[in-house]
Image (cartoon, rainbow, N blue to C red; front, side):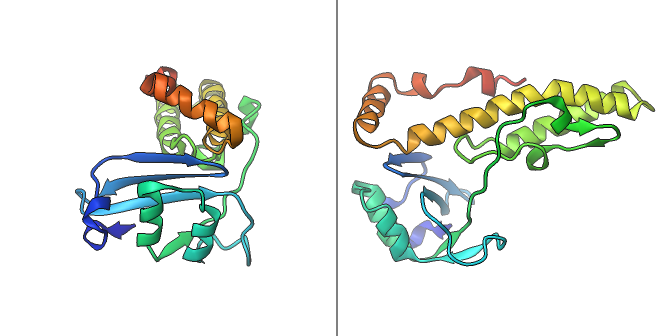
Length: 205
């Protein structure tokens, strides 16, 4: 995250922008009333050091090297920002049953139940949906905690599994190479927003 005033005028923006390339993608968007810009780059590679530590200093030159095929404004942005933080991404398969959400008198929600790759930007969204569903189920069955948790799990697990699977798929699409990358770019140019629209996701469970 950087103050926009520290960037060349040509790179300052109030628009959410996503960039896709071979084995990488980047997203940047304005925050703090547009005064700052948050930029997230996801690249393939291995993290040096202890993977249990969630926050590492990133080598700007290494990041630029991994994104060497970036062009235009993205390349300029990469070279205008010198301080980066690095978080390794872990993974797990999409949920397979309601039992992964709740068992007996214990229930999980959000990332504790269904961590997902950041390629759909829905981790927090699904946690909020979980919380609303859990509150509703507990209110509908007061004093019947185990039954309420089972109902909550039945309501939520398939949607969360679908979002997890779509996030994985998005990552594959974003990081395509060669002819498949060219095909993706042509499809995006021709279909634009229609290709990216997910009414089943944004209209709720």
